[in-house]
Length: 64
Image (cartoon, rainbow, N blue to C red; front, side, top):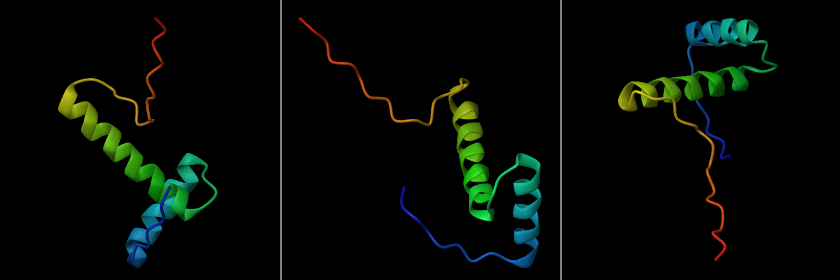
């Protein structure tokens, strides 16, 4: 996965630290990633009414 650099405020850092502790994550980066994935998952669920996977789905080859 590609890396991006975020500029965050002290207040945002405190929130990320709280999330890190609550979720049992090792780093602030993991907390930020967890928040982004959770937000995407919740948005997709609201849009479709269903829970969708955020993983790449590779179709199986069809044998004839």
